[in-house]
Image 1: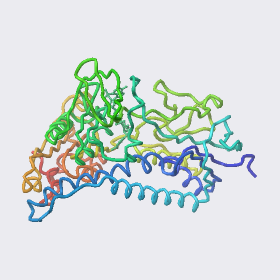
Image 2: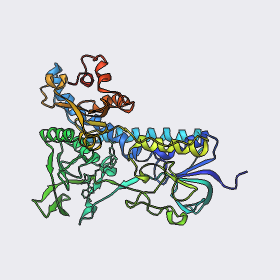
Image 3: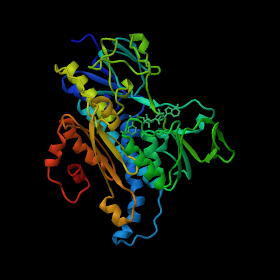
Image 4: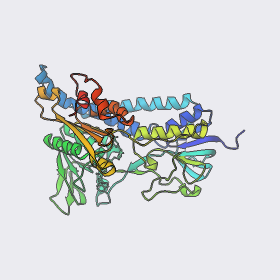
Length: 448
Ligand code: NDP
């Protein structure tokens, strides 16, 4: 008999927490997971999943327009935000149900309460119940970080964007990262006038420069307005409910909605970390070793709360590796090398490995191959948008060290190509593969 109520107590039922709970339980552990809001976490409830469904919804605006060039008699169409919103939210409910089923079928006890750590092996729930566990896993994710400006409370974040009463007529999106560019594309397709307000002149830091430039060029062509190097001063709310953003270096911008997409902070507030000696790094993330163990021996942390790579599949891997290590007698770490990522902008972009600049820094001499083309479908549709694929090759070994692309279906294509980059294949091996014609992906084996 164990001296503890549970072998594992997980705080947070998001992607990382649910995976860890399920795998630990499958290894025979007695597991409980506490969740103060909804099962599924950011990805399922207010992130990747509903966002991707909105992206699909948004794309119809272009598809319906293009369809006429392909011979379809499409009458003038209206878009009803509420229909899409409610269908998306219903699908989120369905997925939450599936996540709950997974937990119960693995005999994981779901406790719908807030949990606070009170010691290395103890947790207190908001109902007052106290439980003990041999191990505690913190998987509380991250939460939107808002800049400190007067009137910030009048803005929303992506959390609220899924619940809006209407698609805004005019929206300012603050930030130039993932969420800003994805939602700019979504609302622009729904007919909103979108202005991206960014503190620097750089969008999507970390992505390849040419690819980012192409996104900005296409976004501008589609009507998205950019205000760079903006110094926000305050947000004013007018009597009619409209808003106005004031700057210390430019004209004010009136709008109906302001959305902050200014990064996400590890969600550690009020967790009681100090009671167990769990340390944070200088960015406020929980410090962990390669096995996700914190500075307290019995407490681990995975996912966005550790701020390693704020991506769902990474959190899932960390949760799985943790459970295998601690309960499966199979110590393993997560490999963060060559993790592919994508921005579901309009059009989407995706990348894996080193950008050209990173490769030059790291390797010295590199060869770069690009294909700048107008996808067949865009040509017939009369759409000017060009796709750009870029391959970065180590000039000494001929190994492909980076692939970057923007264009229709870029994330779908890149996921497959990322296997080759991860496997360390050479440019010659790409070239040796016969093209699949006609496709956009064939450009990858035809780069000159
Ligand atoms: P990002 O880190 O991608 O971008 C944050 C943006 O906000 C940057 O442009 C940053 O500027 C700016 N910024 C940060 N702080 C301030 C401030 N105080 N005032 C003004 N601007 C500021 O964050 P997101 O919020 O877009 O997304 C959060 C995370 O969620 C992402 O990092 C990503 O890991 C994940 N995510 C992944 C998605 C995907 O995989 N497709 C989709 C959505 C989110 P600067 O560059 O100057 O720092």
